[in-house]
Image (cartoon, rainbow over all chains, first blue to last red; front, side, top):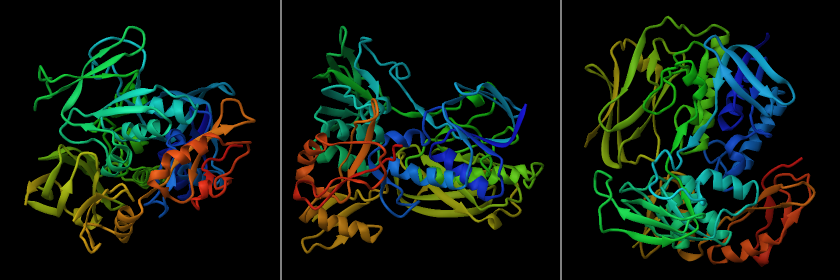
Length: 416
Length: 113
């Protein structure tokens, strides 16, 4: 069996940044495996701008952002394979991929970085009520059709869910001549970034209905009508509140889920963020298997994906050089009041790096104190005027502050 | 007093602008610039894609290299619809200079070999 020091699965924003960082940290024997015919992953279809403000201090489109990393990958001569689908990953890090060029190949890796991104929840996942007609499509699929293949998915469109891709597609379809009738969000607040509400909806007078969801889709062959109803605080449809929209397309932007079936096959423990449980090195509970980017937890900003991936790349290099003490004491990190998840889920004592705690809040909140505590010890306290579920919160803990900490670390919110 | 959502970065600051054009609520200087621009001459960057004539079923993404007036977005889209290009393409390559006389070029945003 062929041996490789580091295999990286996926060449999107996470995979390429991880590869570049591992190489810069002294790992030469790297292979990136990409299932698509080009490097870059989902950024290839994100042709809108707004990327790179943190990473490159300028505003770039998705393809421009990914090209910066492609150039680094090529400059550092990091090997990659395109059209190579990984079909299996074993606990002892044997990676099996299939490609037209190479057939079925097994590789023995010393370390693996999972950078497989996320997938979209679809009509089945939300038990969309009504007919099973054509014209119901996820936002990312519509984006691929339009931006990569040049195909319009419909003329009169309703969008369910206010996730960022749905908002971006509302604008994109409008500019390409479709009529976007409305965006409907089941929660009482938007799932997308404020800027996208402004530049994708308000700019084009597209109404956003909050606390409203699809109660029925109607269509014999093609979608003909969507019925939206108001929901109560338990998200149950309130009878008598139906609004009908004649349309040929329903776009779903109802959430993204980390894509980690390879890890599920080997019973890798997962967290409430729906990705793997990781330590501060982005290493999963399986030795030498690292993960980062949207397959760890879904990010709102790609710049943060690249940054997280560098940590995984650096850590994989340390692991290969046997610099991480895996027998160190383990301190759990748990989400307390107000948090839907926290990352990393555990910390190995004597950290080689400062630790960035990442979390999301359950609902929009104002004037909060974020407490990071271990038993009676206050590790950090930070005041946050506003936090919303669509924005990931990051708090850096200098490694010195963790000296002597033994008990579980709880991250929680409290009203000021 | 006007309230705006800043669209310069993902942070999306809530901006307030008083009658004397004093901006508050911005976390960085770009927010102030955006707010004043938005109330006097609102502009947007347009992104789209155009056909690559010598590659089957292939599109390449494009953008306006400077923001254009908000009320010209659909006019610019109609002009972009008329454009096409031959591969190879490279980022920054100008496809159409000074579109509609708006002092903005349509440039390529993706390399196609």
